[in-house]
Image 1 (tube, rainbow, N blue to C red):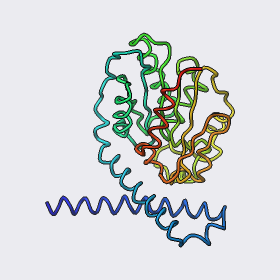
Image 2: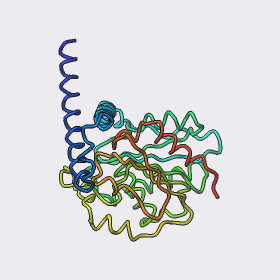
Image 3: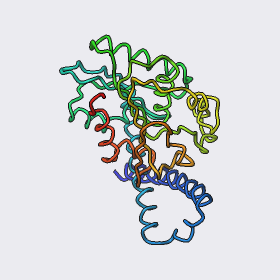
Length: 276
């Protein structure tokens, strides 16, 4: 028992240290662009915000790491029992399908029985992963007899959703799309990526430029949800997407967007809206 708690303590310290380091870099980036923040950095409200961000993101990151192995098991989408449109979920870089368990729980409570999380291995290239998404979209459309499905992507998964929608023939097959914590303009943390897939997130990369110049299909209603305090997208303004509907969250980090009630409610509200 002592060994278990010792390992857990070390694990928490490592994750907390990595989260703190990411927010140190976030602060460095933000303060250099907004020098007035330096004068307010030691105010109690600012210190409480910083502590809340670090502890909250540490907790949710630990949770996703511990749940990661459960995403290796392949669970098929359950048969549809009503007229609700199937929902496909795309996880981020170095995550697994298990990171969606909280979102799935709330989607099922709101009447979506057909949920399918796609595995997106980080050692694959972006076009192979986009083809995998296209295959799942067509499979669910044919299996459930619908013309369109919904698509929800987090982080790199959101960019794969964009690649499918804007460039690789997804127009007309997706009714609603939610982009959650997506590095649309890249991130200055991308040079630390251990995967070639992560290097696509370098600001100004050819992949990101291709997405930026591609048009959006008129048949798909797109919502972009991002956090002003995202610790993985530097600068955080790179998570804003011009030309579509954006919803800004505060007080939460990159991984926390998958679990925080305000972000979850925003996802569900968008999927529940009637098609205009």
